[in-house]
Image (cartoon, rainbow, N blue to C red; front, side):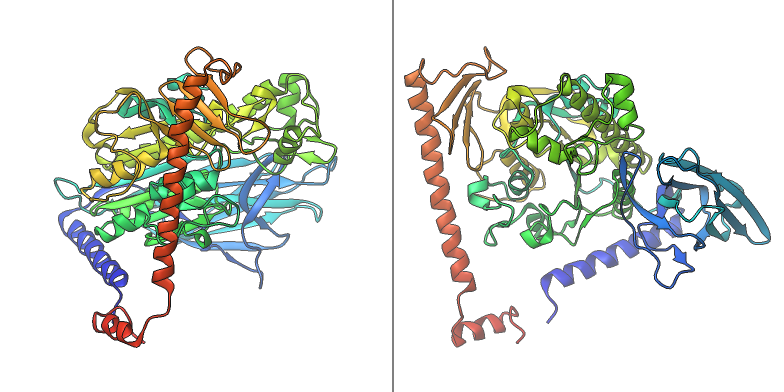
Length: 597
């Protein structure tokens, strides 16, 4: 018997095919689309065992790329299409001090016409990019060949991008359009990273999103690191309930996910996440998605893939999740990476040579050793970290801006319901700490912007406290999907100024108005701050305001008891669902089509 999920996917596939046929018959709209030869695996090789794309560090920048071996030839068939551009990007590296010779030979063949180019590889240890206009060959099939020429045996050549950008036919969009939801999570994005929210770095694309959407000025993540915070976005529950609170725990199997609710309601569902283990399918984050991928791709590659998926589904209701790790600290040399920023940049700007590594500790490992007291921060290190992080934020802004421009050109952006947020922020030696996993406001407070369809509430600012657990009930309510038992609220409604906001996994946090209470699991007693008078959390008021401490402490402890009861109820439910069935129970389920054994 066909499963309900497979049956629903078959119906969706038929709907998409019908929409494409109707579009072809009526003269389809056209919009930007991509054919990515590198990540799709369409590049063929003269080698019996060609190298697979992997994370490659060239200079001080790391990308998902493919090495091109000496003497290897790669090729692919092309269809130029309308308005096509071929983009090739890469990097060449040699042993330090060795000159770089040779070039990348690029050959295009369309019918009897042949075009040859030799792309220079110098300077070494720098990523380069070339665009080639294929407009003269529109509508013609052809081929692309790439080969390294004259490159020495000790040199390495990497291809970061090989793709076509072109105008493509789009499925016809019904009127009125169906509800289509895009949830974007930018890992490690502070609330004040956006210049429209007080940040020091220019973020024109995200500032435009703020102007087009509704912004929540005091939005709190439910945890200070990736997995538990995303668990709350996906389930609408706090970490002690959804249980994905350690590196080995996954989402509670008895707890429905946001994607499952949308899938059951007939929405196409897809997720594309940076491959950082925390969001892996083994932890249940793929539940409810027709397609869920965790990839090592760069943000531009992910944005192109997302744009194509959305274009393919512009005629049907959908829920799409996009997550990028681009602003997070890195694992190679510099603590934060961005295009055209390397150790030489830091030396020129701050006078610090060879920054990023000290005593064999580089990048994220360096930050961890500073937190542990094993390394002392350099003079001016906070400014260096802010600069590098800011360059990463600018990169995220530029690439998401290109995605938004593609969606505008495809005619879907205005009608999309877009939620833009983060799982946690970052500190740069505030309180002597770096990175995240800490209890401070720059870590727990994150941006939250909701762009409603049709420009509703554009430019509005909401000042009352909200939480990551509010995202799921808001989206479900907007879709008309009724769900009970979620602790969050529908953010379309009026918000209470004294509503308690809870966060934390091991340390527990409560924010009511501008008062913040932290119950620490280790290293001391409770902490109480008045964020209005003391936004930097410098002065603990727990000894000065015992009545306030007792009142907030009781609210937090009551919440913790409630979460413990919820978790026990979920455990009992899961135990009942997985316990052996009697033969009578099996017969009843078999008769209903749930068992096919």
